[in-house]
Length: 168
View 1 (cartoon, rainbow, N blue to C red):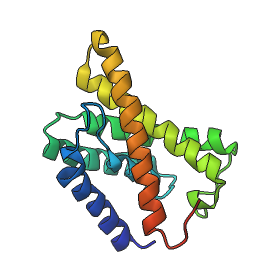
View 2: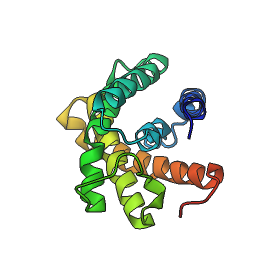
View 3: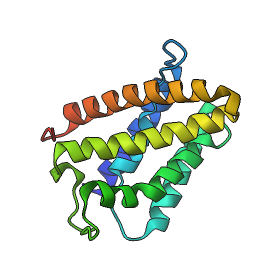
View 4: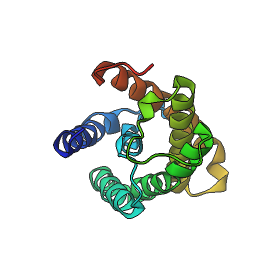
């Protein structure tokens, strides 16, 4: 994938999140946060600084349009920081070839586990920062579970529809 098409994909996801997904609030618990797919789309590189800076700018732009004060930026940077660790654990491969790695060439159960794990961590952090109280822990957990399910469904639906070769 060249840089131009990658940037266009990220801008499309950003606009989709800001203009459509932020307006969805089904039953008070379900709100898809598809911008977390930034972590799955960003190429695997050795230089983590580029990833973390890009995640910060991307999350900050979501915060700017959502008026949320940095919770999306923090959550996205944290998940971007731990993604390589979870990738190595879930794939059971401590030596990942950065140049030739393609997530979609892995078995579908490992792809699903990886996406599920990072999405739930992202959503839990984001909703914890949004509520910022232990008295609202049930609200945080229900928002995390329902929004994670909806986000993952939309993510895999989008991957299935827009990939040239369906990965699953």
